[in-house]
Amino acid sequence: MHFQVEQSLDAPVSVVIALFGDSEFASARAAASGALETDTVIHGNPPLEEFTVSIRRTMPTTGIRDDLAKLVGDTLAVNYTEVWEPHDSDSEHRTGTFAVDIVGVPARAHGSLEIAPENEGSRISIEAIVTANVPLVQTLVEEAITRSLTTAIEQELETASMWLSDS
Figure 1: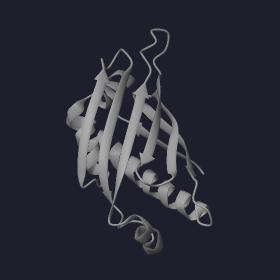
Figure 2: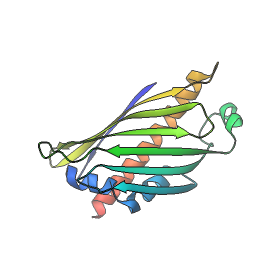
Figure 3: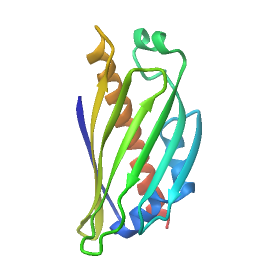
Figure 4: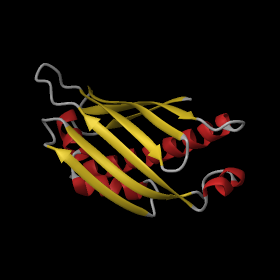
């Protein structure tokens, strides 16, 4: 199942990518997604070089259908990894990839990230594919994950907007 999220941000690409490479912001965005517990690690040298943001979260299952929640319990362990490519001096765009793995659930999401100039600020675009290997309820699981991920991403981007407006 495919989904896309886009949002304008009131800061140039260089400021936004620096924010995404900030460990305090990584923790804040994980908390904004509704996580009960988080662990964040940033590898590499943001913002100009390639860097990786790893966020492990414990997420409540309260937002998913009861019949699906019964299969996985009260919480899910979710591992999120995004890899940002190094700065290209010929372009103001920054691109990356991400993957979401849900521990104990035969489903995952992966996709692309792009931050591009837009007017006085920038625009982040996220495209993803969610796949589940769950016989009989594959579509239900993919829809539930897509809804949850879309909501979490929107909450994280709102957090980014607030952090940028405070700086």
